[in-house]
Amino acid sequence: MQTRVAIMGIIVDNPDAVEGLNATLHDYAAYIIGRMGIPYKERNVSIISVALDAPEDEISALAGKLGNLDGVSVKTAYSGVVS
Image: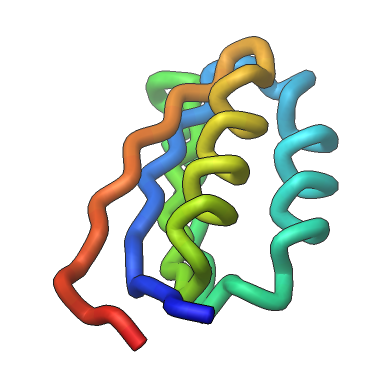
């Protein structure tokens, strides 16, 4: 199975979405290399970056599920690294 390295940028502006976001990320834990979250209290948002090594369809599925959560925006950048 081919995998790609990618970074997912996530902005959360609805605190009620955090529980669903964390549950969804837990479901994809096997593909997550690392995660960094920054609470930006002055603007009442959280900024999260997630590094992944996963099949492209799994990365797309994760982005879709997160993007469907109310108050969550997601963008994904893929590297040229394929294994």
